[in-house]
Image (tube, rainbow, N blue to C red; front, side):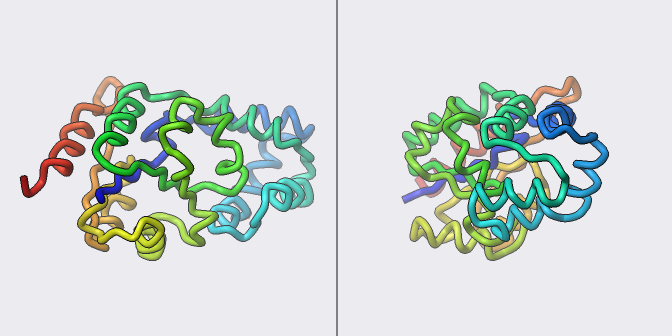
Length: 210
């Protein structure tokens, strides 16, 4: 069985934090600076991404304690979704990959993101069939070695039978170091994503050894 792992942000969906932060500030009644300096610069989002806050409720409660901004899950989702724009070509590639093997997300994100996938990623949620691995569940972030080995273990496959598509060179290098195949999604000079390169890499992986 081949497994096709896709990153989410900047791979399946373009992502702009600067569209998210103002909404979070508006909903929470605090300044953008307060949010950015206390939560993100304070390391709390990174902690959430490795599973320190194990439930959505704990995440939102800790967010309120740290920042002074008390959010509902629906508000968190609305702000997160505002920052995400589907990349049609890579979403189409994920759907094609589902016909070639097993597809899964492999994303550095906290538990509320995983719980919100039906809202945030309507374009892919059905084809994933529950294969929605995020760092908060695996207890490590890309490019740490253990996130890859734990992800592989979830599917019971050898590294050589899996490929990662990701916009981060560090994440791609991390996957290659454990023996996986990997491809970095890059952007063209006009800002568009090099979807053709990703599709070529996907086909090469699918056809290897044949």
